[in-house]
Length: 457
Ligand SMILES: *[C@@H]1O[C@H](CO)[C@@H](O)[C@H](O)[C@H]1NC(C)=O
Ligand SMILES: *[C@@H]1O[C@H](CO)[C@@H](O)[C@H](O)[C@H]1NC(C)=O
Ligand SMILES: *[C@@H]1O[C@H](CO)[C@@H](O)[C@H](O)[C@H]1NC(C)=O
Ligand SMILES: *[C@@H]1O[C@H](CO)[C@@H](O)[C@H](O)[C@H]1NC(C)=O
Ligand SMILES: *[C@@H]1O[C@H](CO)[C@@H](O)[C@H](O)[C@H]1NC(C)=O
Ligand SMILES: *[C@@H]1O[C@H](CO)[C@@H](O)[C@H](O)[C@H]1NC(C)=O
Ligand SMILES: *[C@@H]1O[C@H](CO)[C@@H](O)[C@H](O)[C@H]1NC(C)=O
Ligand SMILES: *[C@@H]1O[C@H](CO)[C@@H](O)[C@H](O)[C@H]1NC(C)=O
Ligand SMILES: *[C@@H]1O[C@H](CO)[C@@H](O)[C@H](O)[C@H]1NC(C)=O
Ligand SMILES: *[C@@H]1O[C@H](CO)[C@@H](O)[C@H](O)[C@H]1NC(C)=O
Image 1 (cartoon, protein in one colour):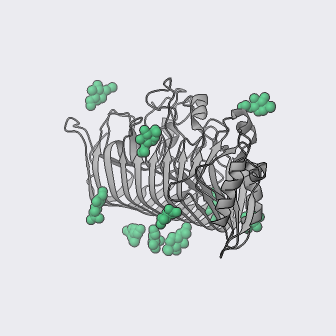
Image 2: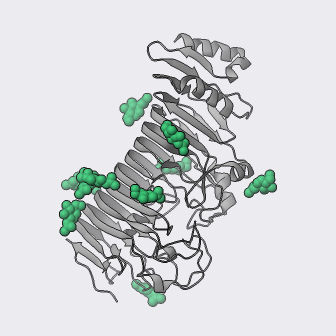
Image 3: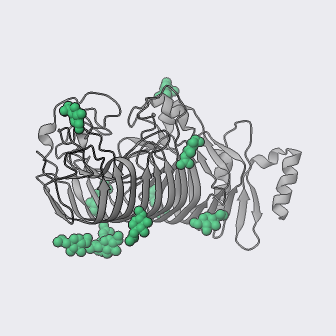
């Protein structure tokens, strides 16, 4: 009470002293550093880093960024936390200086991607509090700048949990993320509980289908293990949750998804010199539906690249190795999902594109050659994947997957080189419109139990 009171008084006096972190001894739990924004659009990164330096490395230390303050994040930053807590009741507002970020973001060694805020360390908490403080990525400038281009270089992710162990991040909102909202990389024993993510486009010039919000994923994991992702609401234009290479022992539960392609395993096998091992994953209690701005393209899906290397990342590649194994997907509710459940082993040239691709967004690949002859080349494996209690409906919008004018409720098209093994289905009922008379369950090179595959050419 004393400290808050003092803060308020100093604030009223408008003292510039407040622009640096104030440090006090907390009553019973180490130091507390409260940061007040400097105001007038001045960069708050130095004050935040100073507070983290003072209070973020000592047992019980607390770095407090209270509501309703807005902190200007005008440069990249790494906050290293040990045995301490970062409380973000306020908002970290990332600057809209595209040229700064494109040139200066941290690079992430995957698809040439970039990040803006790294959180490193161990035994820490980041808590947005009862009102879900967190991040405003100022994403609109990026959506308008990239104009729907996929993986445009330099768009930074606002929250990069990196080289961390034993961390809990909770009660956090990420609005208008510039790119993926959260990346968990090289980390283990991380809990991400109670997140609200919302990327909404307001540029009326945007392409009505993509709304220019592709790549606004919720959370992606890479080289990370023992991760819990619970109680999320996601609205945006890309994967709500995506498991990239080397993600294991991950539990995902209670996720509401509005728009985008849903829950993704992949993409995988993009780099010929990397092994992508995705193992021991549970995904349960997920509801997927369209949003006011965007359709929902898929429910839960798995995608690996073709077995030959063709083009360069981010949007080319292939020939990588590994497997997805021991996955349980249960209690999934699908509402008007375009392509509800599928395994796609020829990802590099996209289900929705013609075999001969043209360079259009939102095509997933920029290849212009006919690579359809490579669709059975992937050696990437999908084994022991179990689906239980999945209900709802698909839209059956005919597309050309796999090169035919047909659609599906469930599609399991595995590569001849690496047939899928032990795919089981229990209480799975995906309805398609009456008007659609074609096959509903597509299988190729897949060992399937509990589901009848339909004939298709
Ligand atoms: C990167 O910085 C250079 C030099 O400051 C600038 O000319 C360029 O426009 C920047 N890149 C982008 C994409 O803004
Ligand atoms: C943060 O979320 C947890 C649930 O994860 C909840 O128990 C807690 O009360 C929340 N914290 C605050 C300060 O609201
Ligand atoms: C990762 O964290 C460990 C332990 O905190 C540290 O020793 C190591 O230097 C960090 N590695 C990188 C690449 O930051
Ligand atoms: C996301 O934000 C937009 C714009 O503020 C809002 O209309 C929409 O309802 C939000 N979505 C969710 C799921 O809260
Ligand atoms: C993934 O893990 C495997 C096995 O531990 C390792 O060989 C491989 O290098 C890792 N892949 C990446 C991309 O780090
Ligand atoms: C499969 O993963 C679950 C966790 O999702 C784990 O409890 C179980 O032991 C794993 N089974 C095998 C055979 O690895
Ligand atoms: C998956 O779980 C099994 C059983 O607990 C364990 O033996 C295996 O090492 C786990 N896989 C990974 C990649 O951690
Ligand atoms: C099946 O999933 C639905 C949500 O889609 C859930 O309400 C229901 O309780 C689940 N049934 C069982 C037996 O778990
Ligand atoms: C199928 O996978 C489950 C666990 O993921 C495993 O217990 C079972 O033995 C597997 N069955 C076959 C036939 O491989
Ligand atoms: C694809 O099928 C739909 C009906 O399911 C039909 O209206 C359409 O003409 C077909 N397109 C082609 C190219 O055959």
